[in-house]
Length: 488
Ligand SMILES: NC(=O)NC(NC(N)=O)C(=O)[O-]
Ligand SMILES: [Zn+2]
Ligand SMILES: [Zn+2]
Image (cartoon, rainbow, N blue to C red; front, side, top):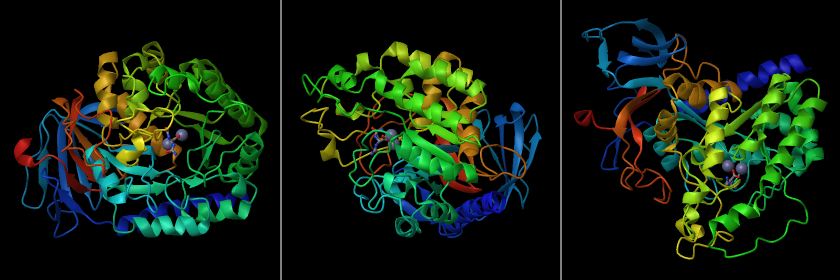
């Protein structure tokens, strides 16, 4: 039965995107933070237009090229030394030497709706995504209430998202001990359009999303392999008798030591074992890798042909434990941000392709739960707000380490599209969705609170000096104006 099921589940994935897209509300975002409903969907009413720049990131490399767009699709990518002239029926947007990349695809964002929309929600979450050059968000199954582990909960997700999305949005379903062995539930969630499943090997911080051990993961994977869909795993495996955190609750180093490297290593080893034990080979996606010590075993596993993919996050690539002030719970996340030396090895892992993708792991809460005044790392909510900043932060830090635009597009768009199996996304290529981001590589990013479109202005990225400001974001040909044209 596996063949038809694969086809039908992929068809449904596509349909779910289309259904949700049809329910879009399009706004032009203006700098004052207000919203203006566009009279018509589409760029100033145009369904056919051209974007041009001297630095378009195409599958053939960075080229001076004109990208023709019609009805939300890329119809042609034509190398051209100069921008074509606008004609009456064909507007040309000339972005000069700014970079044009395939729109960012963030595989890991907690938008927290329904149930905890006071933490974020679809409106502010997807507006911030557009402002940060992200054209597709894949929403996490937890921190919303209910968690997306049942059919009813998935329906509630879709209903809650209806009419609130500014970028394309797809959904992970949750794999938990209660549904892992119930394959008809997993089947139904895939049929609804889930791109895959997410599981935790450590407590998730949310009571109704319990963690799974290897046996539970195996139960779920036995079904998922038949459908060739990914299982994304929070890979930290704390021992049952893990001691309570010790020391000053405001100390960052005490927090970091309370989630030691062994936890990640033990989890990743088990995931590699599972990938080896099961036939056909399961797709296992390791969420938010923090500990670079795991890179050699991951490289080996990949070299053996296992379908393991790896994600890291901008905060692991940008920050370092030595620089995190005590009491600064803005930086609390799990697994923890480690030392500068570890960060450099993560960059090398990305460069070598052992780490495939960068995603935000945007996991905001209300400001109160971050306990910013007490600065108590043990009690504060674990999760960093950063969906809007992830792409620019990766560029800003990457360029210091000789990262190229081609790599940036791979980490943030091409490979995420492959992992989530989103057809026709992730490349600037004829026939693909016209999802584009225009970046000014040298311009300082506006990291002010006013520019931060998330619900709460609580993030370690605020006020930082970063380079690579987003100038425009196109979602299937619809322009989400971020910087008003007069400021280009
Ligand atoms: N419940 C969460 O949002 N958890 C998240 N929290 C982090 N990363 O600190 C995560 O993805 O593990
Ligand atoms: Zn996680
Ligand atoms: Zn997460």
